[in-house]
Length: 329
Image (cartoon, rainbow, N blue to C red; front, top):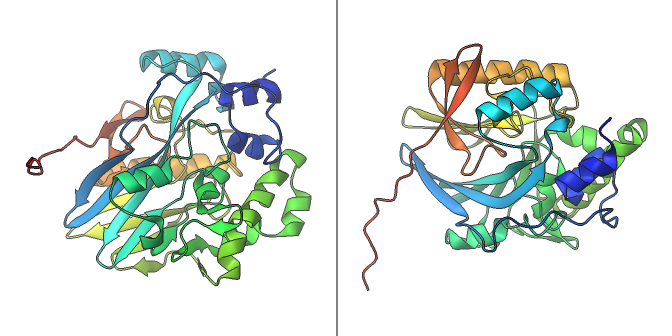
């Protein structure tokens, strides 16, 4: 049996601890794993959706064991070997910046200081891309797990003081409801506390906008309900000049396994059955229509397309482009 302490040791971060039952801020039971790299990587990557610039922003990576997946250990190990990847997996934490005219729109906000030193790099990545937190006008929250909203505040202060946080009403109603917290298993309750801590300063400042279902939020950007991973989990769809990019949030965590086998749920799913159904539908639509997708935990920068491969799918990363004129001396 895979015990919780073993999981925390392998995951090595308080964010995952909050999801599976360690209160935020509690002392770590085990030291975080030693870093594989001595220096940081580049933290941003640019692409265009027709004329709209999108910038992938790295918040870092953390290790996660494959035991969090629902499949048999033998099946998971076979898929991992086929991808030349070992457990624990180095999981990316990605956010995305949409440069939309006078608006700078952030899709998710990273982990903040609730993890090991390997993550919490969103502000540095944003600065490297040429932007400051106070320039962000909107935050599109896919869901209210800590690795997506942890970077919204620090010590009760809004990191993005001019931004309005947009979130599905069902998501907000669930995580900000004390009765839901009391009804939840003890190991899920710290996630409710973290959601209140992160959204509280924005609520107090009148900087939270709730939406229901499929809603136009900004020019060319709409929400798309995708419940399962959490009760109000949402995709965001960017359309520009006939091109389309869908921000997926958390329908994929360990792509080496879940792309070839979309039936694989993960321990963090609120409703595993609904989450699997949503993933299979999303994969089929993306592969069938050929549009771009971007995901919080696909290997950075996390953007690409899907193609059918046998009974599953394969992910095709976006090509790297660096063809801007070189800076002169």
